[in-house]
Amino acid sequence: MNILYKSTRGGESGITSPLAIVKGISDDGGLFVPDHIPAIDVDFDTLKGYSYNELACYIIGKYFPEIENLKNCIDSAYDDKFDSDSRVDLVESCGVSFLELYHGPTAAFKDMALSLLPYLMTSSIKQLSLDKEVVILTATSGDTGKAALAGFAGVPGTKIIVFFPNDGVSSVQKMQMVTQGESNTFVYAIEGNFDDAQTGVKKIFADKELASYLSEHGYMLSSANSINIGRLVPQIVYYVHSYLELLRKGKLSEGDKINFVVPTGNFGNILAAYYAMQMGIPVNKLICASNENNVLTDFLTSGTYDRNRSLIKTNSPSMDILVSSNLERMLYHMSGGDESKVKNFMDKLSSEGAYSIDPEMKSNFDFVYGGYASEKETLDTINSVYRDCNYLMDTHTAIAYKVYSDYKASTGDSTYTVIASTASPFKFTMSVADAIGETGGETDEFKLMYSLSEKTGIKIPRGLDGIEKLKIVHDTTCKKEEMKDVVKKSLGL
Ligand SMILES: *Cc1c(COP(=O)(O)O)cnc(C)c1O
Image (cartoon, rainbow, N blue to C red):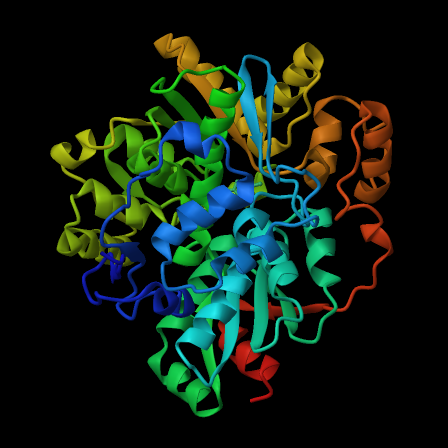
């Protein structure tokens, strides 16, 4: 039985995967979820012999059966643009395994999905015989923007428009985005924070009048944010891969459980771990690590999601989020697929900024542990792991490690643990160098990148090396109220 997609809010069902990918978000504002989660039906001994790309074909093929040239898509996406032959590296250090997901072209885990999404998108457009140019509209807290730009740059039949919060991204992140040269790319800084950018983009998606206006002019909007199911599914692969890798290395025997710790913002990456678990990977706990914007920690502890607080700018900017979009999918699954319940929660979130789940539903979340780390704890953790284990983490990964240490200390759980390592330390050079006491008074983040590399003996990722010399081609700032006009203008309308 082919998998079909439906909206978490009940307004749409029976949607094929190409349509779900192209639409990005459902007409009722809900997110597309599969009508069932497929099981892994090849034994682990066989799977152990698969390369990363073969595993990706197997897993993704179960979710997107209509994508005809999937193998070509995957082989084009995961090629030598990646610094690692196995695409992701699993590095054992300091009592855990770090699943390094940042060896792609933009040095953050977003590459795992966003190198593939453009291929899935163009293949879906072809299959649906759409005669429209797809306009990818993206709000970014830093890493999605560049990974999406890199993925869609120069892809025929697509344009991509990125909005980032002017003061909410690191110098390296900003430089990566504003130097993307291809003529189908548009990048704007907005005066506001990430939630402003994301809310603005969601508003544009919900604007029916704009949609029909764009349609008359040959355009349709789609999303490269993690609300798109085409982002989520490729992320399942690396969780399965890490389990198989631990079996290969003899760290685990088949059937042994593991914990996954995921530094979380929009809940996309950790949701992929949940899908891997539902497919048959034996998971003990999913550990959801947040920074000081700890809405998710509070939610997992109390059962109440409350975004009525100010967004705090932290040294882990990719997690500076108060409205965690993909939690909606998790609510759908944890409510046993109760769409009216989900719609209720989301209506409340938008009208009152908060909602509470009932105790029964909360107990379904028992396998998810939530914790958070402060900025100072983040820096201290980078330093101690570097000093004790000679392993250098970026700020996001450090939060995961710290929350895991707290979890382990309070529970005594000795289950083998994998930490999702989501960005290269060189993406957040200033904070990382500061943490290990190696700034040497240097305030230029780009210069610091080279000295950090020298001091630690770690190579700068290919995608970041020399970035300060690139030409800035996008330098427009806009107000959040102007986002819609900016979209039209970018399209020449
Ligand atoms: C996007 C991002 C995260 C958060 O991932 P979500 O899927 O939004 O939860 C964590 N770390 C880094 C480095 C990121 O770029």
